[in-house]
Image (tube, rainbow, N blue to C red; front, top):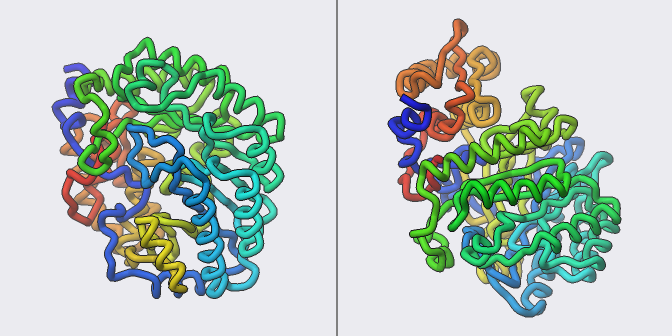
Length: 452
């Protein structure tokens, strides 16, 4: 039996499972954990330990049909200006609870399209953030950039405020694919954006691609990857398109009949992996690639790779503070998501309340299962002795789950003499399905994207 036939028999092309950018996954979050928890968790931060800060800008001038992010379209800056004003108010609310001296080791602006902000708004927001949470000495400030929604004055403003890493959304450079997903983005515009970034001293570059898009095939994806390689990014992420029109209504504009079939979709992912590794990149986890001297590749080789809501990361900050509508914070005590709907978020802030509305308080069992899943997703290896050393007797609950994984996913999963579990290279596409066996929470599969 070929690997593809075996993977198919194991359910790879049918399963819908979490991406495990958090544990537990966000659908487990509950309204029983809210703003009071948020305030207490912020107050408990150690000023000596830098934190990560994520700022969500939920506006786009164009709404790409493939996107399932929480965004809203606007043709004017008026709602964006008002929203930035609300972000500044939220920062002031956070400041009331924040211990003096807390600094930001990482700052990331996501969306939506953060580069919808004018240069004046970029300065205003960045300076307000730094006034409340100054940069630590070795900080990283990254921004998600749409090359069709950025110009030199915006890049100059971001550079002046300290941006030192840019994340450029590409998806696919093929015209027919772009037309089918409502995202026009010529290569020339993207190349000009990269050149301007580097001219302003922003040399660290991530690019995001998507496989499984309508009309996408091996030839078109290979051509896109060839162009991406010419841009010389440090990191690349290539995510599988999640077609969830029951959740993201705009995806109903996509013709399902021209989406690649499951096996072809899997082959596209394999093609991308081969082309990027041939291009000098190291494969990171299930969907990232990095140059060998990039800090993410170094983290992967040293067992320090981690998962967060952007995917894989080398971020060592234990706390992620989310600012803005729908953003999620990660504290030592658990997770907390801000009110998702922009109008409700703004109302909460205007009433002087922190906007946390649902979350999850972590237990020791959660930490155990979460670390096991993170090992699987990052290292394709579950180190049982390490879990025993950290968690003691409760780590023994992993033993029957390891045995189940080895039985269910033969021959791709093997168990060593010390009880540790390894996933063979040929079976790494199953990582999310294998991780699901270590998830103690039951949620409907319909909430998640397909595993392949």
